[in-house]
Length: 195
Length: 179
Image (cartoon, rainbow over all chains, first blue to last red; front, side, top):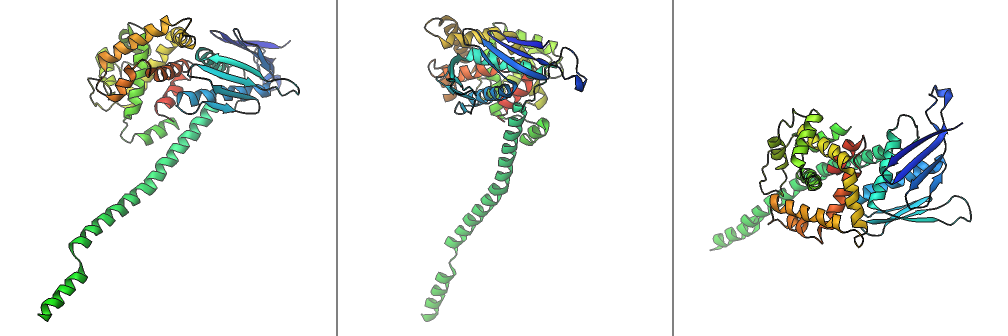
């Protein structure tokens, strides 16, 4: 008998079906060996798959939503799923089956369903009863971006300060070039001596 | 890791203007939905035991006045602890108001069928902007333009709707500091 756990948010329901790993001293009601999962979005076709599909789909939604709110081009493409913004309010999702001769499933969802779906994934990530070997997208991304930012900051510190110093030195030197020209001065002296 | 990075960003424990601007706009959107928003902010600060940072409504108002877009803008150098407290209130309030936020987003998806909710929301949002923000600023003018503010408002509503989980505080902080 398999365990079934549901995560619900408004119009979206995520169902996880699987077994606990008794060898890891887990309780009866826990799930860490996921056999399959179902994502039900009201008025949309049922999405289901195996555990190896769950993590890439979750990551796709997280990455896409991040792009969306950070004013970057909202486009995510992978072997399994494509998400693209049709306009500000509608998003096109293309789910590609790993089985041959199965046409991709296209869904159109609005911002409300997008946030419901991501909130369901958040509930799954935060659940103590289900252990999904996620790539921990949010942490990875934030670390990558933080790393990028730090690098940028260090880079600017490294380059900007000497650059400003060199520029000011050039400017400072330029003023003396105009104020005092030793060659011109020598010529004047020679002229005076000649007179 | 988080605190280290933020300290790096703000050597004197200060928060950038952009972050304050974003947070104040998010709070303003929540106030647009909750007519008694100011009272709700204060009630939530009590509930979340944030009295050390936000002892009264005036303090919340003063902190929000660090937003350079405000009419009554004062640079009080908001501290990280105070900023975090405001983020916690925003996240908690988004949790309570999620059904409404969702409804507003949904009403915009199909404006032909259901435009009343969006129009009411946008009207009140513009009223609040007119009341509190410096309308001479070009950025504020863009917020006041009903056709131009759609993108900003939808993105901010979406941000609020994505920050209702237990990790909502970290998520919102990442968004505000633009990590």
